Length: 112
Length: 114
Image 1 (cartoon, rainbow over the protein chains, first blue to last red):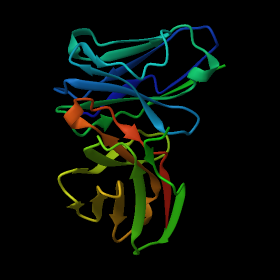
Image 2: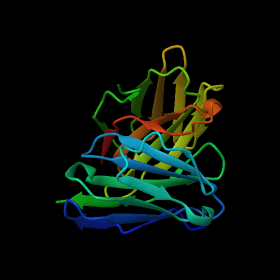
Image 3: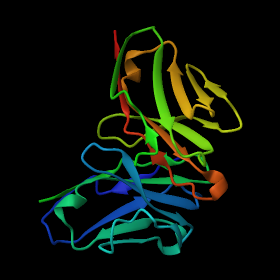
């Protein structure tokens, strides 16, 4: 069974540009989560989808971040316009039921 | 305000000995706890979990202990192996609140010396 996949693995952009991160959850997992780890600090929750609906987006830092999950399958996280403080590693996780979450390898975002 | 804390940033143990990683939490609504292992440039890998209705869960070399009154949990690895060297994250969630977001500690880097 394939795990959670994320694309790209690494993205380097300039301040003010737009970046879109993609996450493909484990097949059959209705729950999809986005997390972020900034500068080696703790991993912090961004938002939670149940199928295509946003269940909880309390962790989204501001309206420059937009997450979507079309058709309840893959998800995208767009940052527009990117700022320096958005640099970090963005993790996606999925779960079949509300319990153990399985993480992808992450996308390392560098904003210059 | 960090609701989940791992006070030891690093731990070094000899191969074959026991590794004990500790985690403290402050939110009494947390009812499900997990440990993840992370290698560089990889995502966190699920290790073991425990529900608040239990005080111990064991899976092979890994055992997690939960002390609800102290709001403390620990991960024991016996015997430790060099391949266990990684960063270990403690995480907690409040499933009964249907929140399910994970709140992570800052991680403990474990180094197992051959």
